[in-house]
Length: 358
Image (tube, rainbow, N blue to C red; front, side):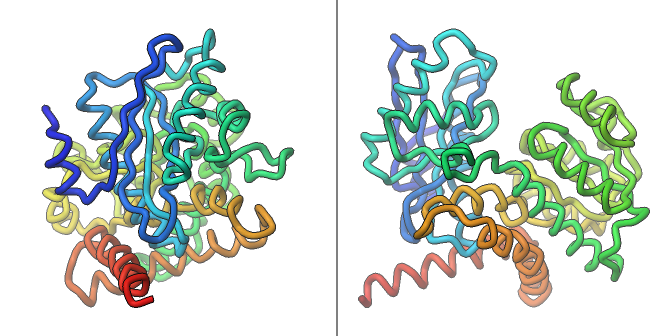
């Protein structure tokens, strides 16, 4: 895969892509700013090793675009952005220096992009960046910030699973429902806890043995090998790890009625829409249901600072947003993800027209 940056930006509608290279601290980073019509671009900083630079760029472009739609559908006055640092997430020596430098890099963008915790990064990394920049969100609750966004992301996904089950089975009761959760990391483990408390049967998998043991030891869950999760006979498949796990190969194996999980970019591409519809699988658009984290982080920028009541209400509303998307999907006769993007773009277009008129 070879990506032509400008043609890809034109296709997706990105405003800006920035590359930062500081080998003296081992920093090799990409920042993607997709859209800032509603407000500054907000999106996490992902830290991982990629197979290629093209793969890293593709990740940033896809994720930053998704953040635009996520914030729009969540009713936030924020745009979409994302960043990746192409370094081993387990880095210890020199980690502080790397994030201090990245914090300085954010200052060069002058508030057009605000970063936050994401895969491979933590609240402690955010706190390091906060020493040199105000454009790092999701800082510690002890300092008045929102802290770890994972529980809020999980709560939004849980609310969406309830909405999807109400849609599919005419009942919000999860007691006796079987949910398979792919990934028991930051978000997945919180989701498992909520599902078990609601009386659901839960099957999990994870490549990380420590995370898996945490789920096994603290909750009554069935554990399967990562590759076997697609063969679990369940009501809901909840992908909560890497993206694109819903693809032509896995769809053939899935034995579920609903897909509703926390992972970004769950679908490999548009070609799977018809495959999911043919199997009668109800799909909840990932960028709609996993917005709890960005809602919590966005709360730091409200007047008066982070407020739990405000965040709680916004995350509760994801339940209603999912119903709205599914209603519009039926009315418009199009796949839920397509309709969710349309609704997100409609809100952005209205804001743009108001700016022009004002």
